[in-house]
Length: 256
Image (tube, rainbow, N blue to C red; front, side):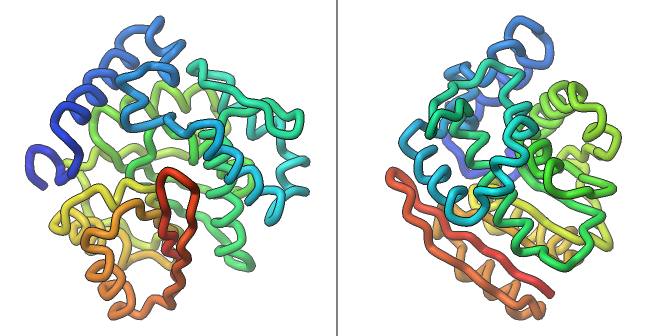
């Protein structure tokens, strides 16, 4: 990959995000409030209350029993970093954690009847989806691939959850090598923000070695080309368009 790791984000936003990651790792006082930091929010933890309502409604429709059963465990993701908390039907939780719960329910449904031992996530942010998914999925290994600066944030954050941290492997994106025998590949927006050359790198090194893929796209750039690669490799492809107000998602869910 090139020096920017193929990330198609404005220079100012990317620099602010990377610098905020460095500060979060180096300064404990910044870590205490990182989910409320404006520079960090440019890329992550920016789901607003209204978008959270859409995620909440999706959860009520497709996973209310699981949500109620594991609500306290899901809320552990809000116990660190001082996120913005909102009330949804009397339940106080951050909109971002609601998004991770929604993603986790999607993934559990997609993987129904299949044993998931090895997961690779590209662009895991601070590790919020990993922590949330761990409530519903007893994986054995979870490999986080991300910017070197973001990887260090994930390490610092997920150490607060030892039962999850013990199963983790961290791979800076500039050190990515071929990863075999992947049960589940996840990318929550990150892949869609890369140039096509970088998408192909991840496809060749991880995705084509995976049994199941779950990818959230927030851009249509290179989308058709990427979908064609999946289909040509033999994935049974499913996508759905989801309108969530101020931005839209295309969910790619596919199995070998």
